[in-house]
Length: 464
Ligand code: PLP
Image 1 (tube, rainbow, N blue to C red):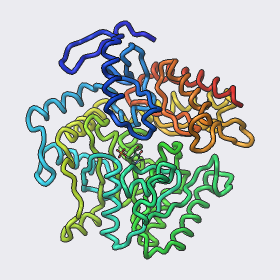
Image 2: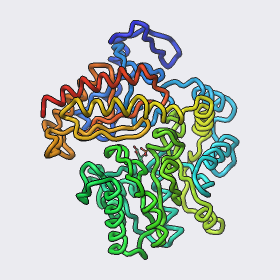
Image 3: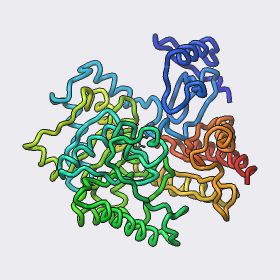
Image 4: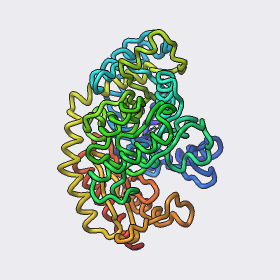
């Protein structure tokens, strides 16, 4: 759709209307010549030149409008150009743009206090980082220093970030080319009811068998060697795997039984994605360390961190924590974080996510599953869902093979292209069409975007 009202502002503040072929050509030329992109062969990528964003929508320079059902990389929880976040950053830049981490700053302190107030149990200190991977890196380093042990257990089908230890902990193909990494992570199977590695027949049984498997892993790896278990509370990019009843509590119990720390990676699901400040709050468990990033300030300025229990924090009262980053807890990022808390509270964001998730999204997801033979499974909570695509519902043969690329990935690429041609930018991974719109998405936008998903599933159906 060409939105005749669409405009963009250049970096000098001059407003232009869209489409603007000349500006697009200039953006493409610099990008093509000088920007080295992540995750892809440079020759294969064709990035969308983005001219403007507002709320749940962004525009390219041709004036095409995209409803962002991926919240960029599942971080834009308050949408583009939220006035409160923009103002908080502008005000902070005008008064004190930066202050290094070993000095105290009002916004850094206020954000840490706000985070401690919504964290479970006695987790009341915050170590700030620049993003999610370094949050996990430092949480693992704290666990190793605290326990005097080195090994870490992490789940297959997890993503923990792309620094050495975080990518070693990751349980998906993004780890492979970075191996052997830091060499002391052991992977185990987490619960995944639809493709149960334990052949269980109910969520409760899946939780029980996954816990038995985890306990055997602990025993065989040696509890005396294991510093921590790191787990995404709801597995994100690897398929929105919501833990079955009792699983996370069982992990907590095993950690207590064997003297292992429990690190909850909430980089993707923290700060409202499932309608909770921290997703563990929904499941009633208290980890020893929680890592966060993304939604803490919608990524307007890079920020992440580790929330630390009193017991672990106290260990470092007399022993130095050998970790630190030049920009930790950057005031511009923290100002946007404090503003995030204010907006969430004033606008009832958590309540709205729970309401929209249950009242609007869940029934529509069920409808899509009933209607389309290519849908093997739908699952999710709040504004975080996955539609798992298959060629055959009986055999559960995946629409594209695991880790498919090139020609093998063509069916998924066709699904993605259909979404984009209908004005929706989807969140996809392997054989899944996932769903993670900004938390300020309107009901009209939800329906419009899910209508586009419905059409994209017609395309998936042609491969059944
Ligand atoms: N942990 C989880 C669960 C994530 O989803 C991500 C990023 O997607 C990370 C860690 C890494 O965060 P970052 O890319 O900010 O380093």
